[in-house]
Length: 264
Ligand SMILES: Nc1ncnc2c1ncn2[C@@H]1O[C@H](COP(=O)(O)OP(=O)(O)OP(=O)(O)O)[C@@H](O)[C@H]1O
Image (cartoon, rainbow, N blue to C red; front, side, top):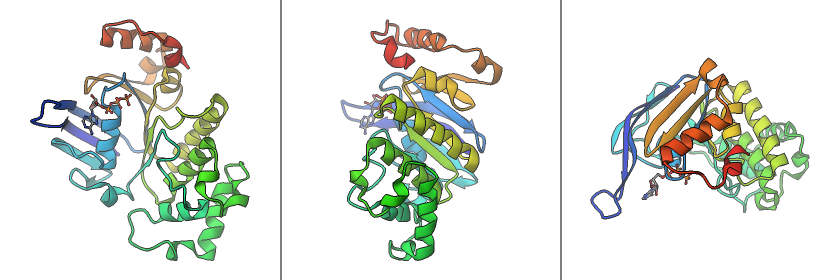
């Protein structure tokens, strides 16, 4: 479960560049629920994920994950609770380490023990089995450096990594945006499988209106640091991509130049 209460985030407070990125956001997401997050550039989507991951500490408000108040806990202290997959496949893993070393680090998230203890024969076999489930043949490349993998392969391994430490929250920050359409589809199917098998409470930021409606149980739209749309159930089922685009237009008070980008 995730509970955000009255979250305010202001960057550069007291400077000419002061920016209020989140203006009193409150949001409760039940355990195992999958929420898609949309909003135009600068709406506050990444800031919202940052608040949950611990990269951004709110100026005001309270953040609860499960039964733990994590409001003032830095990223490392909540790493066992929250896993994140980024847009850039290079961001969430270490290119200079092998696939199995990356998995070992992910499995130890939130603990102090080193890599050596995390890579005994049993763990190696377990990691290999988990990677074999991807059906990408990567189980035969466990000692290859991560930076030898394609972006899609790396995102697939990142999703396995996200499940290894038993985190209950998964944050997806446009994690298919840098992939070709075929690979994006594969990663989304994998995402759905992982989320439902592990009953992860999931927030997925996407610029694709199609993805926002096709995946998950609930869609929220951020604009100017506030939640301006929150739909689930039948009212979400009735929504079309065109409806979301019309809402975007209304919010921005302008015509979008590139609707195709949003429909895709
Ligand atoms: N570290 C920072 N320092 C100063 N301003 C920031 C910082 N991070 C974000 N902002 C500002 O806060 C606002 C919200 O940014 P955020 O990255 O959360 O938006 P977003 O919805 O994720 O946008 P995008 O779709 O472009 O990624 C923007 O105006 C942004 O410029």
